Amino acid sequence: MAASMFQIFVFISFFQISIASRLLNEFIPDQTQSLKYHNGPLLSGKIRINLIWYGKFKPSQKAIVNDFLTSLSDSSIKAAAPSVASWWKMTAKYYEHSGKSSAPLFLSVGKQVLDENYSLGKSLTNKKIVQLASKGEQKNAINVVLTAPDVTVDGFCMSRCGTHGSAPSAVGVKGKNYKFAYIWVGNSETQCPGQCAWPFHQPIYGPQSPPLIAPNGDVGMDGMIINLASLLAGTVTNPFGNGYFQGPATLPLEAASACTGIYAKGAYPGYAGDLLTDSTTGGSYNANGGNGRKYLLPALLDPSTSACSTLV
Image (cartoon, rainbow, N blue to C red; front, side):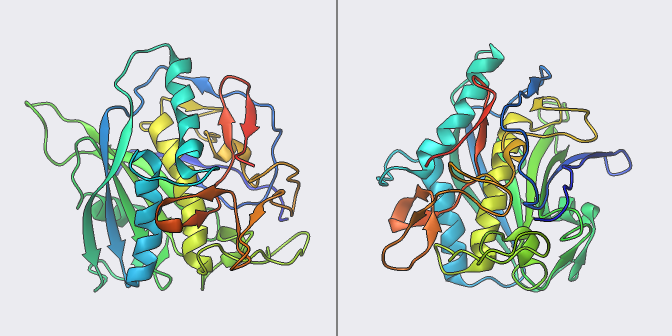
């Protein structure tokens, strides 16, 4: 595994956005940590996840993401245990732990925006990511920007695999301005799979154990699911930079990033843990989703025990 790289939390006043980044799977932290609640709002109630597809994605690749997101909260999805829904239920403990009353969080897939012609070019800055995120609905929503393998983004592969943050809405409500939450995740298959799609590709540094087989047969997309899952957990529990996180605001660890590199019991540097294996495809996974999907999802920090919790 590579030398430890830290989670980055940056305030960029010029763009008026706050950012927390999903970094590379490069270290196993102390598995008994606690995240401090900074008394800010958590996302609650009915939240729609709007997807902005930037670049070219196959229908089969879009289905991997949509099936995952639908599996989070939709009670009509009947998935075998351990399930995506049971993994997501860990985030509910953060609401209980905050001591504040709020409507139960329910996520659903909302608007899908296709930008296959690279309207902002193939090299994106943080400001352009926010521009793209603004194309989705901005109230009661999380806008997720997904960039194709041929798109470069500032810091991608060098210090991060994805980002979540917030930005001012372009349209106020009843004369008041508000912020909307967004996520960006890049497809690392051709740029840095050893960093952002581990354990489905050999890491660039550290122990060189054989890569695992991606459960959906797509190293880039299965890697995106890991990072999207981590950032979703961070978004709902720390949407505006004053929710749950550990350490200084400039270097926060959140619900999933506090457990980086851990996917199952027995994990250690270079080893994701004792995962389940699909008898047909040989794919490694720890969660079942809708439409027979299987996914690898990161451990989440349990706020009631201050320990990393895994499904298997």
